[in-house]
Image (cartoon, rainbow, N blue to C red):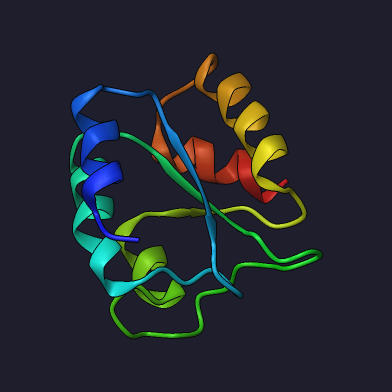
Length: 108
């Protein structure tokens, strides 16, 4: 996975993005530029694990690692698969587009 799809999502001005990440919430380093582009365009990015019963954590600090993504402003969601996180994000965005409020919503 590189940044191509993420840049296209930014250019299409989507309201938000759910990414089913590897393992504990890590992405390939090539995707980081696209994440930066989305966040700079004020498009919230929510990260879930694609692993069955997986969780996302801010442990690994390498480029694309969960620690770096969390520091950039990516919202972590645990206990939800991608489909459920998408529905939650759609409902949340109908109430607010403030990143801090969205993060609080996804912590519950």
